[in-house]
Length: 263
Picture (spheres, rainbow, N blue to C red):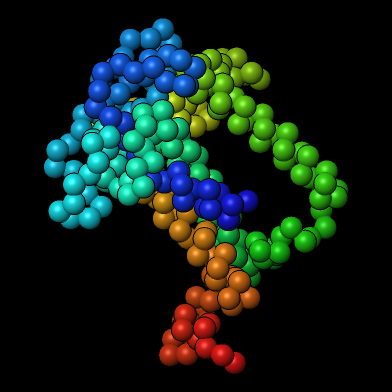
């Protein structure tokens, strides 16, 4: 699952901000959205992008390069990188932004699920199977039933996320605990007790954008890390923690180059 998330994110990760124009109508439910750091008029309570003024002195992915006009720095993680122009269409830009957020979060969960159990097993605290072969293990039921259960729960969660994209704020009330309401104001950032228990998503626009930029950066690193762990297992037959311990024990021979050396 994590590997497929990383593969999908190759497309999603190239567009990160919205054009600095006035109110536009989006395919996200045919309603107005916040664009270029200005709030468009609409009847719902949640906007599609973080509200933060574009920084003319922001960091660019390649020093001296000129970012495309549709990447004005108003969204978190926008470093002017879109060589294929996948964000030139405003609707595609909004969609890619939401897609990257989700891929980043799945990748961070996937990276934690790979590295932490493998490390704890390596030092003797846990005894878990390798993440790469976890699907081959026997569980309380067969793999088909597990797939159907996973499909149901993830489909339910994704359905509610899609409903929030179509009609922002429509799923703010917890269906099980009605008193628990989401507090976020932007699509993709629901807030509330379940998604922002420490309240980091509130405060000044500068603070909020900084936190969200950190999330995007960590998510992009996680996507690369999961993809790296996947290729690492293909070429070495072991996981990243085993490879790390082997390298620390014999740094002169247990290297990346040894994996490509004919035996």
